[in-house]
Length: 275
Length: 281
Image (cartoon, rainbow over all chains, first blue to last red; front, side, top):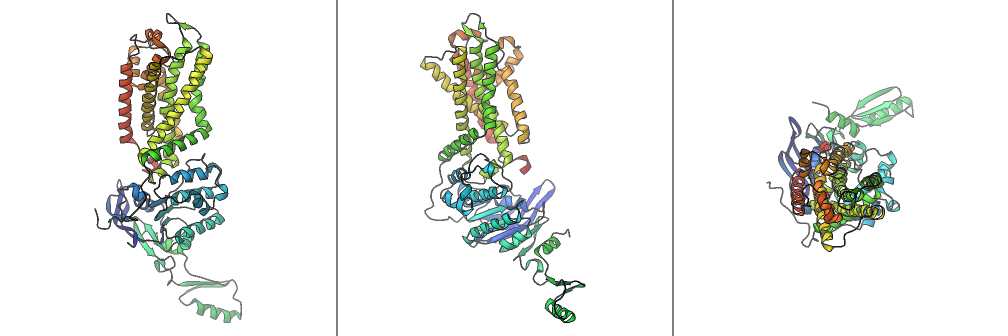
């Protein structure tokens, strides 16, 4: 079986609002897949349906070969979830918490190894209350992977992180992906998706509006490049030629020269514009 | 339902799932650890009946006519009932409402933890708390107010079943009531207010002989009156039976009403328990 997740025609309504409107999605085993989308686009609803938290109204969904609308304990033991904003168990230590959660699973990893993997060995005996936001998130990840999941959901894992903590956290996720765990990541940080994901999908208005490699998403690789310098700006298909011409014109260094392609963010903002 | 959901077992010899009982005991251990580290909750749960017992015992130092019993002995029995009910109802009602909001329940629902293990853990946790509460109240009663612990084994058997039935019924009601508060912030008020009223009408503070019939009828619907009655039969002995409305402790009815609340509370929990907060839909 090559697919970790397959979704066809997923639909979910809240009253009159169609939060998810016939969504299709394929996520392969072993890949890191990022789901992007503005708040209210149906991103969280979709992920919560995949996680077995929420019932769907229509469509076919398979997660690790099982319908998440009817979650079993066996299936839950194969899926790890790192959800948003948890503030539970502040008075337990990191080690106590991870050890306790290991007791839920048939074949858990060694708690101390997991604590080392998420970089919390030195804080293992600290109460969770005493940890920084970034460290707490690492505990969440430890609890998500303690059961040796085949598939891990990460819901906005680095919200509120400072840049250094975010980069450190990315290394942790890259390590997990390297072990072959399928990872489904939702995030508002385009840079995060670009760094971590093999493929990304953009959800808007309850549907996938673009899907692919972050480097080529939405025609990004073939889009015109922009050449900027102190006295002008040009959009062109042949930026190298433009720079050569400018070099001749200035006879050497071009003042304040930059050549840019549209960033993932530019493409993303264009994709989620109301049509 | 679809052709794409064909289950594929991971390995031929997958290790078995841990049993609900084993996980439930692990939950009980971690719940108890968490409870005693949460100093505010410990003080909140234990102090109320203890302070009231010391207070009432000091204010009302008289004895009850024709029984050889003191008012403080009466209060000790009543406050054991209130303390046990508080450990179950109030503690869980507020605690679970908080866990629903802070993400505890959502996180647990995403793991293979058997749902029943959560409730096993809660009930065992409450039994430990309630037991400690009773020990403390009895110690105060014996040391300060000449309460005599019963010597007959049969009294302790009565104590045992009233305690277990009462704690369990109160715990299940607390679990059910935890769905009522809209947020963790409002939980203390929403849960504590009715509980305080219930204590006043259930004969914990004011003897039934001083209350209008309709209020007694209301109180008779709820478990606290019967728990207190059961505990009075243990700690006040036959002399105290004359203080009861029916001149008897009616232990058969105590068992019946508490048993009914146990079953009713269980049904209520199974049908109304939510693993998500209202915010999560």
